[in-house]
Image (tube, rainbow, N blue to C red; front, side, top):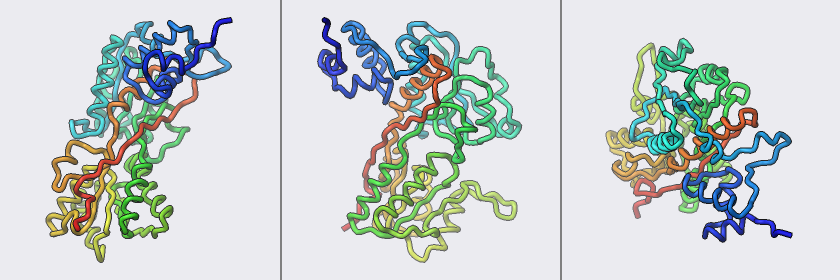
Length: 359
C-alpha cells in the first residue's frame, strides 16, 4: 500500500517550511507565483491531491495554476476615484497586479472614475464590459456606486471599502491591510513608556480602513485602562465647509487644535499624508516633534522617510497585497458561486524619530 504524501513531505523535498506549502495548497496568505508554482509541481510529482477547500460541489475546487493553464483571455479593469501616484500605498501593489496579468496574457487597464460619473452613477465612457474578465476597485468609497458595480454580476475585488460596508451592498471579495494589531502594539509600547494622553487624527468614516484604525485606537485605550476623550479624536471630514466656503485639511487641523488646552503626549494619524499635514501645522505653531509630542502614521509611504523628523508608521505590505488581489480574482473567476471572502494582509510597525522621546 502506497504511503500517503503529506504537506510536510512536500515541504521537506523543497526545503520550505510546512506553513509555506500549506499556504499554496490551501490558497491562503500570499506567496510569490514562482514559489506557488514550484509547490504545485512538486505536489503533483509526489502524487498529492491538490485542493484548496472541501465542498459538496466539487466544481468549486480552486487551483490557480489550472486557471493559468487554461490561458484565459480578456482584460482586468481597475476602477479608482482617487489619485494612485507613487506615494500611494497601492503603487507597488499595482505593479504586481499588472505583472501577474501580463503572465496570464491579459491586459490590465486603470479607469479613473470622475466626480461626475460618481454622482450620476455611470461607468467610465471607455469601459467595455464585454472584454473585461473582472474588476478591481481602489479608493472607491461611494457606497451607491459600489452597489452599482456589484450589480454588474462580474468577478469583483474591493481593495478597501466604504466605511459603511454592508455585505448586502458590497457583494464581492474584499482585500484589506491589517489595520488593528500594530496600533495596539504601538499604544502598548507608549503605555510602557509612561504615556497616558493619546489622540487620533483622521476622518474615521473616509473608508473602512480608517474606521478600523480609529476603532483600534479606542479599543487599545480601553484595554490598557486609559480614558477615551472625545475631544482628543479629530475625526471630521477632510473637506470641511463653513458658511459655504471650502477649507483645506490643514485649516481644519488649525481650528480644532486651538481647542486643545494642551498637546497630547502621543498622536496616531489615520495615514502618513495626515501626519505630514499635522507636522506642518505643528512647525508653524512652534510645537516640536518629538520633544513636545510623539506621532505615528500609517502606510509607511516614501514620504515617511523624508519628513522631519522621519515618521514612525505602520507598513502596508503592498507587494503581498498585489498577489492576494490576483488570487482573489482568479479564484472568483474559477468559482463564481463560492462564498465571498474578506482577506487581511499583515502589517508591521516601523519606529522612527517621530516617536522616540528626547531624554
